[in-house]
Amino acid sequence: MNRGIYGAAAGMTACQDWMDVVANNLANVNTTGFKSDGVQFRDWMERTLRSEGGTGQEIGSIGAGPAVNRFFTDFSVGTLQETSRSTDVAITQPKGLFAVEGPTTGGPRNILYTRNGSFRVDAEGKLVNQDGYSVLDKNLNPILVDQNGEQPQIDELGNVTPSRVDPTNPAPTSSIGVFDGQFTKLGDSYYQASTPTTVLDAPQLRSGALENSNVQAIESMIQMISLNRIYELSQKAVTTQDEQTSKLLDSIKPA
Image (cartoon, rainbow, N blue to C red; front, side):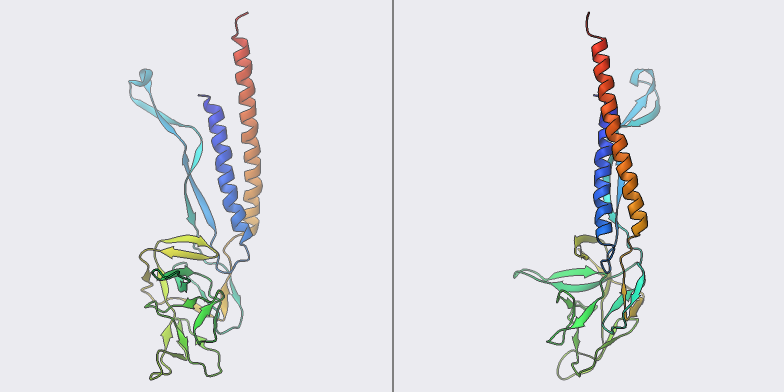
């Protein structure tokens, strides 16, 4: 096996995987509530080196190039943009996502999670997001707004006023649920979680504001330029080592 070629080729593959992540981050630099992704690498193949022809003590290890170990999401808070809309709300701490109820096809409930707090009141008096999905409270119930001609107000704890639960109790207070857990990104700023829990301490929310994407555009563009250069160097290394191998084979041919 030509270890040099395999190592350089592994570097090219790793660059392409990383480039895809950076490109997706840049494409969502203006997406409300978007959280940037990152890549963690490991050695594609690592071998232990031993002295005395492999029978002696361990003297180190040698790798064969990088490979993707896992993808991860950076939940650091993005900048806040004031909108002055009473139904817009932003989470001002890294922990926590809103819960909304997505469409179903007759199966179990499709609970989705998002950092995008751009909400509105629909014709039925439900608090919904921009896709029309019901915003859920701490008990995963839809939030109904008392339709009195005024826009509801949302405080820093997520309490919605005025809200309603049933006709006999026209103006209680409902609270927007904020959940924590192990989230899996689905796309369109939505996530899924198997066993989410409500944020135990008081959620830190800001009404009349939205959270911008936490993607650093300049940093991402610098990463993209660096990755392009690394890819080109790895590609050149493959070509150079292939040429050297060919020259070596030519030199050992019998006269």
